Image (cartoon, rainbow, N blue to C red; front, side):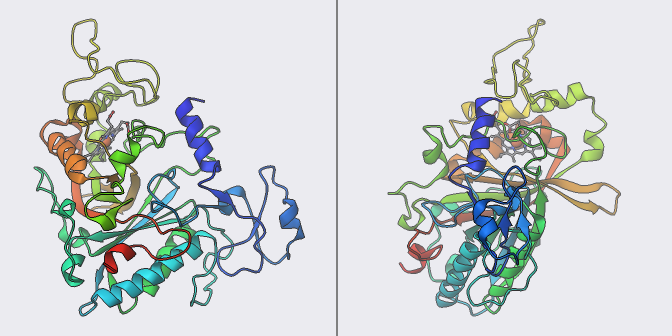
Length: 419
Ligand SMILES: C=CC1=C(C)c2cc3[nH]c(cc4nc(cc5[nH]c(cc1n2)c(C)c5CCC(=O)O)C(CCC(=O)O)=C4C)c(C)c3C=C
Ligand SMILES: [Fe+2]
């Protein structure tokens, strides 16, 4: 196991994830935990026998409260449901305050496998446990005039990139909610619960679902693959990097003050032209990305986690990693250090009328400032990335993701909404 894989493994089982033990009798998605060996733990044995026994996957939970919102630094779960909401006409700041209070309380409860306050249990996720559920909330630029507030400068509209083919009805939105969990039912139930709690205040603008590798599918934790077959996520900034916080989170004295500890999320639905991609040789596919398809190793040599050597030459003097390879064009070294934390999920929504797969990547990138993260990198990719002929950007959103809620209480966005 490499150090990176080791870190990911530790994080999954470490302090950011808790194992839910005996919770029989609590409403909602809670249950008994089965230990790694399959037997019931002592705590579980002592509990009332009513609830379904859980494996560690179902019992793992991610505490909602903390300095940053959840769903950013935690290892990716197996499932994503992303939804954008628009405030209903006439909903202003008081209505949004009330909604964010309801949503925050619900997200905290669901993360523990409990039924949100004020709701009767609908039993939908009764047997599943929290399954590492995280809920992340963001504000789109369009919400600010509706609550008589000024949008952060960082929420200025993204430039129109060449080749963008954006469907505006599936882009933007006043509010963005990212739900992730290791169980599809848990994720969809949580999003349905949040949508019900929004009644009268906000309606769904668009919703998209994605998937990644299920935990436990490989013997060792392993970076996931996308639908093009590439190992995707290797060179993400790591929480252990000294520059991680500065690149991903707005600093304590940042501007605006209410975004302290927050981040900016770029969300893009990027369709893959898989019929065309699948006609390419493996050699060509590897030169498009600049990494080996099987191992994820850079074409400059080594293993998946070996540092990329952009200067390495082949015997004939050509660059080992071609000039237009995706990783050469996207690397922070070629973009004044521009970096982002990518948390992309695959989607496959059947087939289009032309017979092509409606499939690709729900690309999510978190950064302290999109103007020094996503924007310069995407500008460059749109001009000279070998991958660009195999993909289409079909929808786009940019959201301010405020800092987390301290353990004592409060709600997401409180510093904005009570300023
Ligand atoms: C604007 C940012 C990026 C977009 C949009 C994007 C789309 C996209 N990427 C892949 C597949 C891979 N990307 C990889 C690396 C990588 N990608 C970006 C940025 C965007 N990608 C960055 C910053 C990096 C890291 C570069 C580096 O420093 O090495 C890789 C290699 C493995 C990895 O490091 O994750 C793959 C594979 C697809 C399929 C895609 C759109 C559909
Ligand atoms: Fe990429």
